[in-house]
Length: 279
Length: 162
Image 1: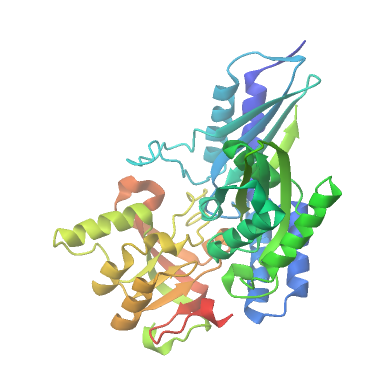
Image 2: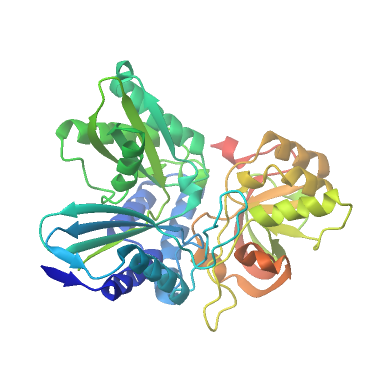
């Protein structure tokens, strides 16, 4: 049995919060560069140039890419042959507290959804736990900004709506989002499970590289067709029009009930931040 | 900046004074107006809540937030003299009408470009609602802030040009 100390988890989470907020990932940078090179609209091209320049400034000056440093969403995969020597939830929240303070990041979390008093340290995080074989602990931090989160949606379709219904709902959600989620966006789609399972799948889909494809050929095909449909909406970078509304569409699926076809769409902004480490 | 001289789709570079105000500040600003009190500033509003300033810097990252959330309050503020708004994303018909009626303008900055935009800020001081933290009203002196004219006072709208 491998022992993991809470302090190791806190350190890792703090570093991931800072890394994810300051440095754009390689897949997103490539996608933004490709979008810029292909863009014909002058205004949209200027926006894409600005976003790439912004990423350079953030890295050089050690500043967060965006002022909305997000609510920290943390995915943890715990190896069954490991033992965490303390309170994992407290360790993760301490990591968020430390990362946001040391990074000079914005505290964007309010204690109560109606009275709305800021918690002052960006905690609590939203934490998802899973178990796996082995003795490793994998932690992914995905700081989620709400410009894009607010444009996300879940719908319980009927089985008769089929793939066409799924594709229409995803496209419609992006159309209604317009310029708000800071396009070019990344579209995470969850299909199947129950209501909350579909939402979680959509969130997890945003962790996949933007240029990756679903392991199942049929769903990989759906991803390409959705990307094409979304980019034909013409929303474009910052909503000023243009060829690239989305950098990618990632779909994850799960078995579902005989009576249902849950679909969730989680929209990620032009950075779709996430960073992982294995302890 | 004279709003009547600007047309939707124009790219401009702004130098001058702007005031940050987002969700919580807007709620309080409208409360002040309801109580018959004056607004704590007179000038352009920037829908933004910055990151804290790291040592040696004026301010942290400061890009625009989604303007649509301020649509519930904006017509009241426009009527009270806040004619210039800076944010990101389209506005409601009520805001568009108020802009036209009162000769205002709505400008957009690139959403997500918070690090780059922070380099335009030369001075920052809190002028109201300090208890709101990032949502406090700050007086910013900005230089060469790159903006797009999104909605002008003649009905032009960059989101409809595409």
